[in-house]
Image 1 (spheres, each protein chain N blue to C red):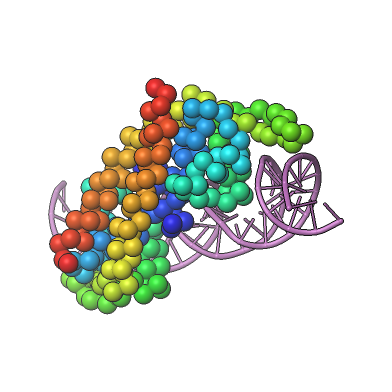
Image 2: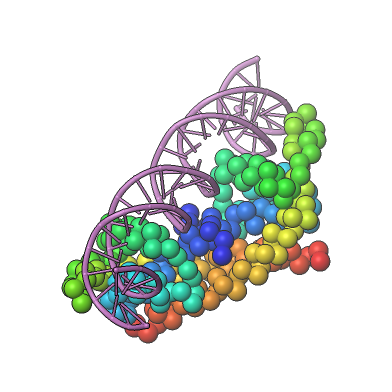
Length: 106
Length: 106
DNA sequence: GTGTGATACATCGTAACACGAAGTACTTCG
DNA sequence: CGAAGTACTTCGTGTTACGATGTATCACAC
């Protein structure tokens, strides 16, 4: 999938992936794989960013001797998803513009 | 509208805006304004990029003593719109993922 | 017991990109 | 004359996705 097209979706996808249940990096990647793929470096960058923006909080926990960082969504994070849903109307209208211009001439 | 969300849409919008009829910078901005807004510096950067990618060709013409550059879409440009339409399925599936995770818990 | 692959997180450098700011230059209209 | 509209250009900056690379543990096969 086109990198540019992904840019506006990744943040919200990560938030959606942890909304119902706290999760950790590796799991998030697996959960999102059927829908959107991202490298580990991308995900951890995003998680760091969302943390700095107070859209999620982190808690470390030990699991089988390995460290795991569990991410928990905040009210701001939930609001971010809400804003995205509202912006989607605009996205659809843009899509329709592209389609309209395209269909006039095929 | 969120900058990141626009990134994947701008190129295709510009191509759609010139698909049926050759157009020039200022006009393109006006045509797209109801759907998506972009600054002049952004548009001219995009037009330059699309030209380098052979998605459009340029022809200069004089209009009322002023220079105008008319942009004409190429087969590659048309193909780019087609690819976008095909990728849209994926975008919708991602949107549904976000919505689904969101609706489980409100 | 040694390799191999999965799990799990981190850092660095890079290239793409949107955008604001500022500039040039011509036309129209009050 | 001055302001606003038309039309294109250049520069610098901040954001961002990603590949490459590294560290470390665990499970399982051979």
